[in-house]
Image 1 (cartoon, rainbow, N blue to C red):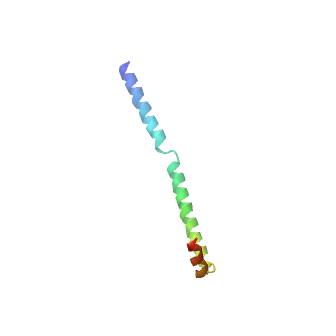
Image 2: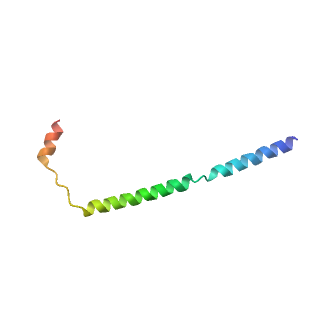
Image 3: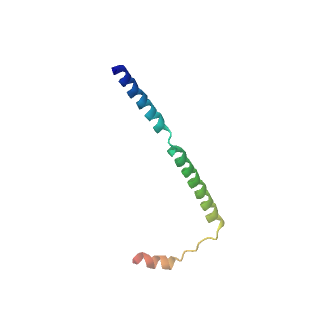
Amino acid sequence: MKPVQIGAFVVALLLSSLAMAEGGGDRTFERMMTNNDRSMELFVAKEKAGNPVVVNDKKAEQTQDL
């Protein structure tokens, strides 16, 4: 009876470790990071293609005093 219980415990331990090994979290994280990188590249390309932003130095100096 004792070897059967030990064997059942070992099998249960192995099955649980295999079930937890790949739950899809790694694939989801990889897809999220890929989408984030792509969106950042598109944002940078869009900002470079747009009109340059003109900064008014007088206004910037006045707002720093506040």
